[in-house]
Amino acid sequence: MKRTLAVFLSFLFFFLPIVAAQNAPSGPPAAAQAVQPNPALIVEGIPPIPASIAQQADRYTQVRSVAFLDWHPKQREMLISTRFGDVPQVHRVIAPGAARTQLTFFPDRVSSAHYEPVEGKYFIFSKDIGGGEWYQYYRYDLDTGDITLLTDGKSRNLGAVFANHSGRFAYVSTRRNGHDTDLWLMDASDPKTDRMVLELQGGGWQPTDWSPDDRQLLLHQEVSANESYLWLVDVAAGQKKLVTAKGQEQVAYGEAKFSKDGKGFYTTTDRESEFQRLAFFDLGSLQPKYLTSDIKWDVDDFDISPDGKTIAFVTNEDGAGIIRLLDGATGRQKAGPKLPLGVVDGVKWHKNGRDVAFSLSSAKSPLDSYSFDAQTGKLDR
Image (cartoon, rainbow, N blue to C red; front, side, top):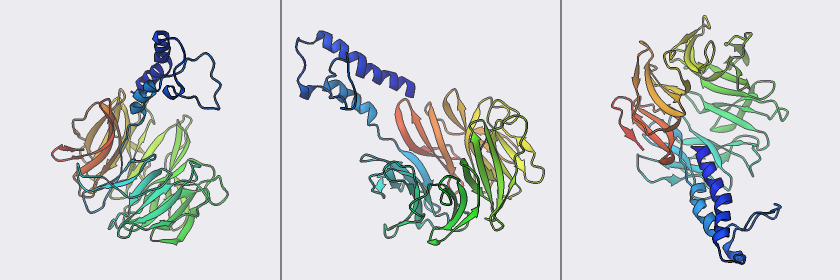
């Protein structure tokens, strides 16, 4: 779809003006009626582009998308990312179809937001300044609207993941030397609790999930698009252990999540396959059990229900996102909601154990936020 849109816009900007110029009366158009090239460009042999063409094309470049960010831990409401001005900001939606309430107002885009997982009295969000990509984390207090800088304001900070039972969150930061992304930990209610947990080498590191008792972390290391590894981190000891063996062939692993009993973890991987399959690794044997071998498509995303019994996962089938539900005990699958043909991203269960949120873009609609009831299949936009 993106390729089709790009070709269409190229046609508008480059071919239609030529046709218009051939059929127009002699003499150049008035300056006010033509698009003025950027002064930094050298333009040769290109006819003036009528402003009317640019105005028609503008509606295809100014579409407002909406991305799901996070569920509130107690209420059936969510944070989304959208824009009313120039850049995406955090908005709150308290019910399907309800008005969006804008919460952040910055000249720079806000790239992520996560509710504190117990009471939901605040959320943390990520933002840089001027597009420099030196991302900082902030706390937004919902009762007052106050915003507090949590990180140092200088380093690059990424990958925040809240613990299950408190306001502690793990993230990676370049604070130590400006380029290595070490593992850090902070209680979002008090920036003074910030401390480095584990010194790491290079980039490509990101925490993905906490164990049910909040004592361990799963840590993802990406070397390239085709090679990555998963590590188990003892938070108190500040030590890591490789849980995906290195072999002769390169293997890619996706995001990993603990099982609810803490005895293993789920991940996606192309190990022993040409597709990214959903797999379960027992922490005792570290051997994978593949759960989606019958599906000859990549599993792009997944999330585990609060009771650990059901996994919602997304497959990429000829470029279209399909949501399925997997029974963790029996391995049986059932269809998810019936969706328009499009791209699905960001699937996440609500703590109520019924609602699953995701983002969807299709040929008939820009990116928007949805949820479905896992028991009835009812879809809400």
